[in-house]
Image (cartoon, rainbow, N blue to C red):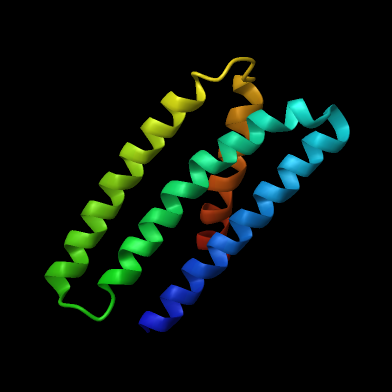
Amino acid sequence: MTDEKISTVGKILILQAFVIIAISSGFAVFSGLQSAKSPFLGALVAFIPNLYFALRILRASGQGAKKIVNSFYAGESGKLILTAVLFFLIFQIPNINILTLLSGYIAVLSVFWFALIMR
């Protein structure tokens, strides 16, 4: 059962990477490379914390229940902190379009939710 969950997490991360490429490419083709920067960064703000969480849980697999639960809490806390720090850092960059930044962020997050619904 653990292998199935890991492969599901892996599939979600791969799909999120494809969404990053698709949304960034779409903005680059239709609006130029400069316009693709904001959605790309927004997508990374969603992807990097998810990758951190997945690696955290992967390290805890096969261990006791208490360690797994602690990994979930630490992973989720780390995701929140990483997300806040990444948004803070990105808002320091000049000429960021907040609307397209959020579109990239939401697009990558939606992969996770659609995967749960489709499952």
